[in-house]
Image 1 (cartoon, rainbow, N blue to C red):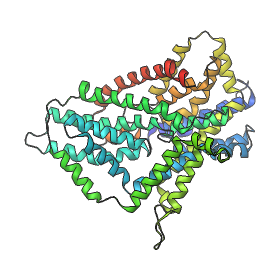
Image 2 (image 1 turned 90 degrees about the horizontal axis):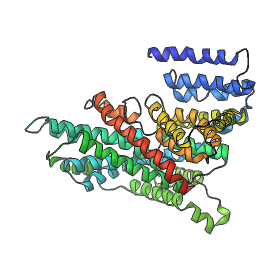
Image 3 (image 1 turned 30 degrees about the vertical axis):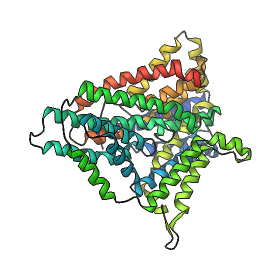
Image 4 (image 1 turned 180 degrees about the vertical axis):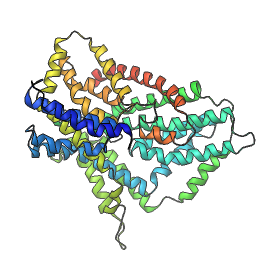
Length: 476
């Protein structure tokens, strides 16, 4: 346990007790109680004194005790439809990983893109991004890392040793994997947890529904542009590998694909269920218009996919299924609890008038709308370098909603780019799991990640401000 964790463990409840026992009210008794709970949660989230998922359980205990909300209302946030949307997504990811389909997809993409150094980097980045749209950013990075290290090992062992060009190539591949894992997850609702926290907040608090397809219309082009920027910054600007040539990488990819063998019956079944689910997500509104009484939602489709993976046998004689319940031991249950905690905190801020107060203060000020949006995007993006992005969104999203209301803006104009900013942490190893995983490979120094990352962070801010100013008003 680090010193900051030890300090945080004590500081969280101490600040809570101080805030709850202030001699005069800051806002009102209930709002002050929510602020006190939020302080405790933020301290524990920042210092990671305990698991961030354990911290997310605090509203379940403290909100009923402090008479902010009864237990039933608090608990409803932990069973929100958005939590089950992500549960279904997790189960799909689990099936992809169990049958090794994610690795086959990744290798096939790399094989298609080509084997010149720049094309290899591009192949790794596209493959990682495609995986990150459907499975966790961490899992997609873990899949790609050993394949990348095999390719780099060829350069270390070749006739001229590990030259500067070889090293630049290694840096581009490793950073490319991390950065495209971060940016790729933005493309879909289930790609990264902050997206789902936002969708849940909009549905629970403001009855605004953003469908799977509508999010992709915004998220996918942003991901493609951001990953293109990452690619150009890495291979053309920061770490060019010039005339570096090697052909053996093609052999490694072929060998890895050969190890997987022919596509199995289980892989084909997962692919079919996966394809049907994505089709239903994309064409849900069309299906609902054809069958009006169906009332299909993204969460229902997600649960359909999960049940199918557990219930459709690929071998009826043996009674073998793609997934068994014991496989869910590997499921990220903590993230689901984290969603619930974030939604409960947002609900607490809403019912006690904190969001309305923020909206009122902003409405009375003379701050420029564009400047406010730029500052919020900048703040979120650089704060997420230091703390969990999903925890940050859970705390700041309700406040940002209040700011949007105060500025007289539709809240999605501000909330979508600010939430996306939380997934654009490219600068520090501790910012995201993909950054940490590739840093642990030993091929990257902190200053090298920071040098490329700070430029990409600034480009991301510019891109997100453009999204706020020009694109979102056309879509909403």
